[in-house]
Each structure stands twice: as C-alpha cells, then as structure tokens.
Length: 338
Image: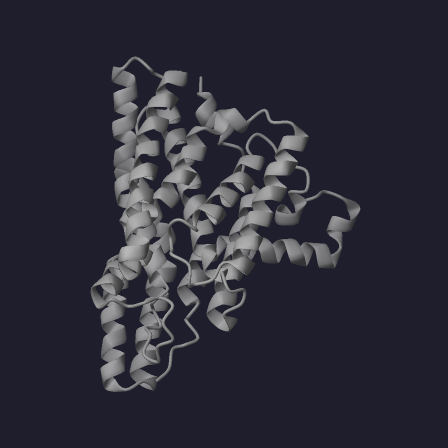
C-alpha cells in the first residue's frame, strides 16, 4: 500500500506545473532578449524549485513501488532527456562560432562547450570570475548552461541523500509512517538551512561564485524536495486554501520579476520570495487543481476549449514547458557579440 507521501504527489501530469514552467521560460527569455522584466532571471529560481519537487516525488514513488531507488536508472533517464537537445545546441553553437567569429573567440566558445558538456558550466564561470549580469561584449553564448549544470550536479547527489534518509528512517522503525517522513524532512531541512546560510554569506562577500555555486543554490532545489515529502499535508486542502496559495504564489512570482533587480544580493536573501511563491503554486495543486489553475493549465473542459484559439493556446503552453530544457539551451544572451 503506497504511503501518503507518494500518493499525494503521484497525480497524473499536472498541467499547472507545465504552465508554471512555461511562465519561467518566458521570464528568462524576456530577461535575455530585452532585459525586461528587470527580475526575469528569477525564472531560473522557479525552475530549481519545480525540479526539486518533481525529482524528489519521482524518486519517492520509485521507492514505494520497488522498495529501492536505482541511481543508475535515474541518471540514465536524466541523460536520455537532457543530453540530446543540450549536445545538439552545443555542437551547433561551436560550429557557428568557427564560421562567424574570430579564431580566438571560437576557441573560447569551444572550451565553454566542453565544460557545459561535462556538466560543469557553472564551475567554469566561477573559475573565470564571470559576472552573469555584466554587460560584456565577450560574454559566452553558452553562459546560460550554468543553470543546467547546477541541476545536473543536483541529480548526482540527491538520490544518494534520499537513499540515506530512507535507510535511516527504516532503521529507526519509521517504515512508511509519519515518522519516516519526519526523518526525511529533518534531513532535507538541514540541507536547506546550511545551503541558505552559505548563500546568505556568499551573496554579499563573493557575489559571482554565489550566483553559480551548487552549494548556494542547493536550498532552492531542496525546498522543492521538502514540499514533495510534505505532500500529504496539502492533499486535502479546501478550495479557498488552494485558491489563496495559487493567487499568492503567482503574485509573488510576477511581483518578484517586476520589482527585483540585479543590484540585490542573489540568491540570498531575496530569492526566498520567488522560491516560496513557487512552492505555494505547487502546493495549491497537490491532491487536486486549485480554483483558477486554468490560468496556468489552460485545460478547462468546455465547448469553448475546442475552438482553434483555445487549442492553439493550450498546445503552445504545453510545448513551451515540455521543451523548457531545449529553450534554455537555445536562449543565447543578447550581449553576445563578435
């Protein structure tokens, strides 16, 4: 019998999450293309929370089905999903660089691509001391791969952490009970606290490494993981509570995008706002859709939904969210110059 943790988070594909991803994509693209809204870069923070939520829920469901978590299967699935579009973009970018740029610049782009292909684009930017927000004429066209590298590094560590917490819970006799969830929540809460404390210090003392570091970003992904484990607490919320969470979360995300600027210390403490807001949107749909979720999901079943306009809108949102990885890979910073 599956535990409430898994069952509460194991609904069919949530269209509201697809819409949330699409919103994050649009914010990041707006930031790259037009620098509008001023805080469009928070779309990355939204992605981190969503990724932590989905990945943790997926691993928990695997454990409920099989009694184990297969790291090999998990990493293999991630590679099959991420590698094809990412490697395609890297190869195309390198090829175009050698055709369009000077030899020195093309060699630099090739080096960037090598780091990105190995999942270390963020670490390379730290080594270079490259300010993400600097208006540089020589910014790498592959700079945006840093966030994908953070997620890849998260994928390498997170399953092992969950395995350790599940094992600890079993040895303490927690099994599939509330005690097991408490053990897991405690372990992940420690990750959130430690990472946030690190980010709080580094965002001011060392802003460039803090922006790219997996250690200062782990709390955002872990926050999504905490929500996945706490899913039973939200499974039976009333319609009003769901509506409040959804509305508050969307206001928090959009307000952050409009009001936050690159002059603020990032990712701590200010990323707390989009992180909590994203978690609120995710929580609003656990156990059932929130009233008003059609704003994200565009999945309302009505006669009007069969119109060409409605179908096109829904298709675009689903496509933009499912191809989020590809879009993030293709979205070149507008400051790239030859």
